[in-house]
Length: 324
Image 1 (tube, one colour):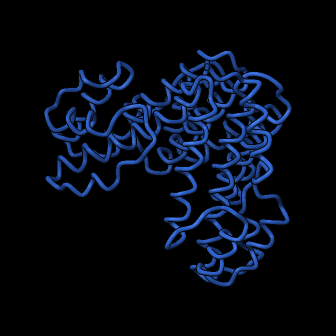
Image 2 (cartoon, helix red, strand yellow):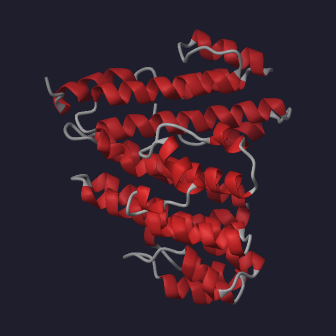
Image 3 (cartoon, rainbow, N blue to C red):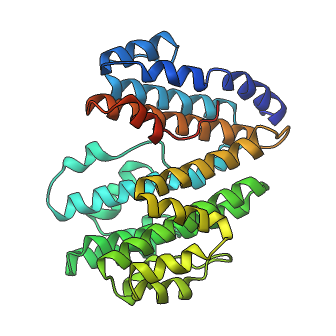
């Protein structure tokens, strides 16, 4: 029997109750060691594992298995999964070019393209086996790495392809949230690329090959500013209100990490505002998934802080907004 969104939403609403709230996070912040953190996560029903990384990986696998089991249309997650596809292609390409097979351990799941398809496409240079959104960029990336060894240019071509496809897929579903989420994500990916390029003195050709043009992002204006240097770029961006860019740049001037936190928080807050209120369609499932991802990022920040003996107040400042 086909799944209905009515059933799926009821299921995911119950599941949301297991997401950590602020009280849970404060308790986790009190952990003094990774082993203590793992024990507390197990006690809270997050999962189990021989260590922190395994615990997180097992929980992520369980989340995806759950979403597959309750989603009437699992394709709605494709805009998120294709990011794994590009990661896997990069790993296979660079591993093959360096004649090392270590990359197979770097391939991640879930994805929309089977690992064996990506490996075969790279090893036999048969990019036609790949989806149409990736094949041309994959061919170009292969040429760039083979003839110039320029890994940054190679990555730029692939990253641009996946950003364009995220925009296309985001707009293809009947979800205004999904469309706006990926417009925001691609906007800030563009900004991050432009800022790095301005700081490193990248040329116009690189910027054109890396930045995605879409409504709401004036690529030519940003390229012109970036070519003048970081100060000129930040001045233009600080006057850009779309997607909250002016506020994001205020945070960047405090620190790059404050900027990253602003972007992450803006994305999860938009999910909370749109998906927690939704009573039909895919939004509740998407919100739950994004909530799990936000929670995972918070757990990584806490674990990193414990490993580096960082003061609790500093760790707390770095934490992202959560969905729970």
